[in-house]
Image 1 (cartoon, helix red, strand yellow):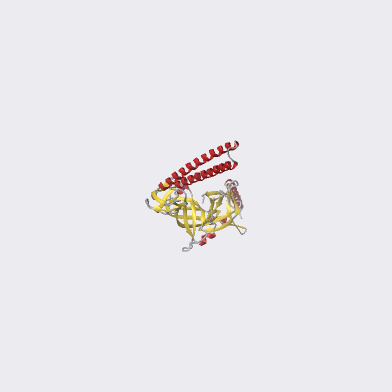
Image 2: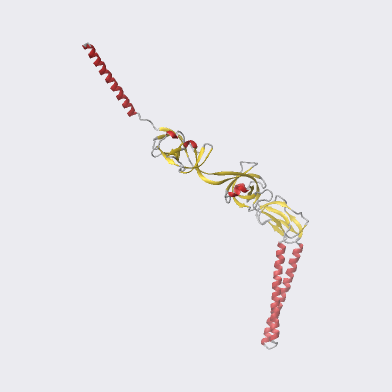
Length: 366
């Protein structure tokens, strides 16, 4: 090869090597100056919910207390309130003719006055006998007889006093008063009719303390219904809602329907519910505090179920084992392994690694 060509070749190789070295150095500087950013991940913030099997049943609104009212004596009905009348405790709701009872009270008072007078005379006689006995004017037998007459007179006075109290109490039985606040839901007799003791005159129902009454199948009794929380909605106005607790379950099934009657005591928000209205009751059976998480968040930790939880302090992921109670739709319900406020990765979990630095792309709450 000519000498001048060899020199040119060596010069070309030197220039090429210099350029290559510069390019490699520039790439290395660029990588050092611009590190790879943390992977963005999609997440959800979890919060525990009381979740169980929901059971629905139609029923009706009934008063908690429904009391048939009656008199304790026979008589001619002279007054009663009408159906739908709202009354307060102590209000008069019905009366019978008071004339016979008033006469009995007057007679008892007269007998008491006579007994009181006899007792007074017997007391004076007994005292006089003792004075005469001290002067040896009468015998001891006469003194003892006077004392015996006094005791008999006092006994008759006590009997007359009790008779007057009974007559006055019987007079009070001519009125029937409301034992509590409520509304008259039905009447059985009219004024002018002769009624007997114990005969139902009217029915008083409470309009503030209400029950939602349901007839449920036998299968539901296997659940723990006692003291369960029940949501009750009016069928005619679903927006009207009240909460209550199961307070009574009949121990025997209805002979015809083979269902069991359940009474739910409603809270004060049901005061506007009309008696007899149709309602829909919902109860959550066997409830548990569970975390609702998308099924796409499920990862694997050495063959065990797990999820990636974002640790804010380290800005990194932590693979945490969990216990899944059940699956529903596109979600899973976790009973153990999470806490309120945990941030769980919900997408691309197969590409994530424990301890990996990440950033949050999207956060929500289920």
